[in-house]
Picture 1 (cartoon, rainbow, N blue to C red):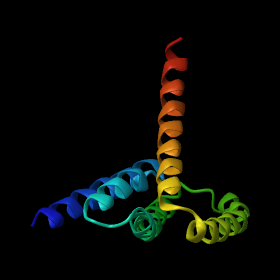
Picture 2: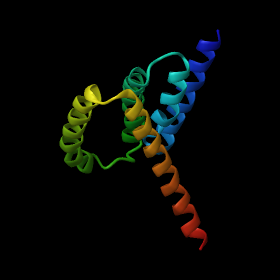
Picture 3: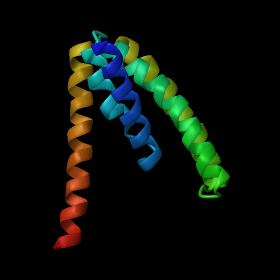
Picture 4: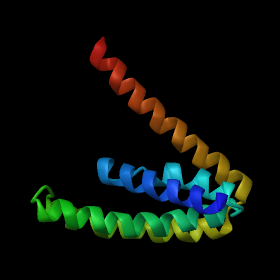
Amino acid sequence: MKKFFLLSITGFFSGMLNGLFGSGGGIVAVPLLSKTGLSQKEAQATALFMMLCLSIISAALYLQKEQMDFSLALVFLPFGIAGAVFGAMFFRKINPFLLRKIFGGFVLFSAGRMLWGILSEWI
C-alpha cells in the first residue's frame, strides 16, 4: 500500500510539473522511484518512459490550444534525438554512483538558475 501511494504521488507531481513547465517531472520521479527499491539506472530509465508519455499528452494539449511553435520543434527534434541516442549509449556505461552525482548536480544547477532568475528580477 505504501508503494502504491508513493507511486501515485510520484505520478501526480511528475505530471503536474511536466504540464506546467514542459519538463521537470523527472526531478521528482527519479528520487521517489529510487525509494521504491529501483536502482538509480532503473529509476532514471523508468522516469524517462514516464516523461515520454506525459510529454506526448502535454504536447497534444498545447498543440490543441495552438500554444506551440511546431516548425521550431521540428528543427530542434533531429538534434534532440541524436542527443538522446548518445545519452542512452553513455547511460549504459556509466557507473551508477557517478550517475547519481551527475543527476544531483543537474538538479542543483537548475535550482540555482531558477533562484538566480528570481533574485535578478528583484535587484
